[in-house]
Every structure is written in structure tokens, then in C-alpha cells.
Picture 1 (cartoon, rainbow, N blue to C red):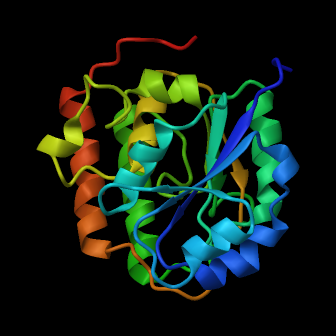
Picture 2: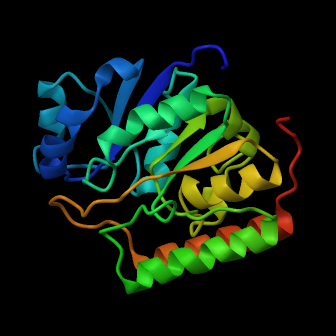
Picture 3: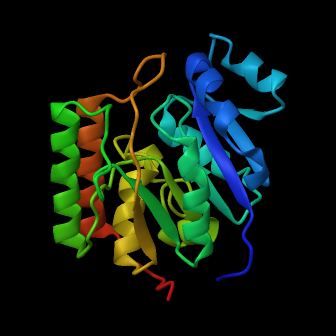
Length: 244
């Protein structure tokens, strides 16, 4: 067992008041040194809910989940973080499991929707096929053995994220400005963890249906972004550090 880690729960929001009311009361706050809600301009009471319940809220400067992740990461003071969507897709009872596995020494822990009987109730035919296809591509090109490379619910050691040099992690990798199709952390982290031989483990994690709000993910745009990330990393990303 490694030394005790401190954890940040990172919660991206955009008009998720129904999900916040349903999900956040089930989060055990004692597990976290900090809980950061990064908001993309909610107008439905999400911000007011956060203030009423003592949640630290950051207003992201631009739109989209990638911007929320990058902006929030600059404010994280903990050793590790968990990305948790409050739309109902992420289950609060998986948080202690993610923390436990990361504390065992892993660099990234993925709550896979397709491992050990886990399932997604939010998938449709296109998203299920897309995840299967992109996961197969990543496994083939980067010699990995993932079952789910697109799921958002996962835990990361912050130093491992810096090693992965994801867009926005360092001033040396401002890729988003040049390549707006670049996706959020999930695809890049899956690829680069494999390339860098980081310690990664998947746990089974069901994905319930969304609670209220509107799905923000655009299937075609996200699919193109995922494909671009895979191609970019295969051709141009050269790992500089082996975490082992």
C-alpha cells in the first residue's frame, strides 16, 4: 500500500440541477480533501445549489468539457483526482472503490461499463459501437487491453497526468489551440498511459441513465475528436518519461 493520498472530486456542470439534487447527497465528502465544481454557465439553479451546499465552484472561461477539465486541473491541490459527472451517469458508490484501487499504487483507475457484467443504460447503438471500435483501435495500436477507453468516471494520480502531457497539462502542450477537435482527457489518458507503461486497472462500473438536463456529448464531433486523438498520438506523440 502506498502512502496515503489526498483526493479531489472534480465535478463538471452545465445545467445539471436535477442530477445534482439526486446524486450529490450520496457522495461521501469525507473521502475528499476538496470538491471542485467547474461550471460552464448554468442558468437552472446549479450554481445556487452549490453555494447552498458549501461546494466550491469555478466558472470555466470557455465552453466544453475539455476546457472545464483543463481549467479545473490548475486549481487542484490534492495528490489525485476523480472526474465525476453529476448527471446520473456516474455512481457515487463507486467512488470508494476508485480511491481504494488508486491507493494500492495504480496511476489510473477506470470504471469500465463493459467489464465483469457491468453495463451502460445510457448507451445507444451508435455510442456502444463507437466505444467498441475506438477501444479496439487503441488496444491494437498501443498494445493495451482496455474494455472501455471513453468512459469519464475514472481516478488519476495528478503526477501521472502531468507525465502524460495531456492537452492543457503543461505550457508545452497547448494542443487545443491548434487542434480544436482534440477530445477531453479520456481518450488521451487511455492512449498515453499505455504508451508510457503506467499502472492502470479497470473495475466494473454500471452507467445509469442520465437524470434530467440535456446530453452535451455530440456523437459525430466527439467521434472525430477521438479518431483525431488516436491518429495524432500514433504518429506524433513520443513519450519522454517511463513512470516505472
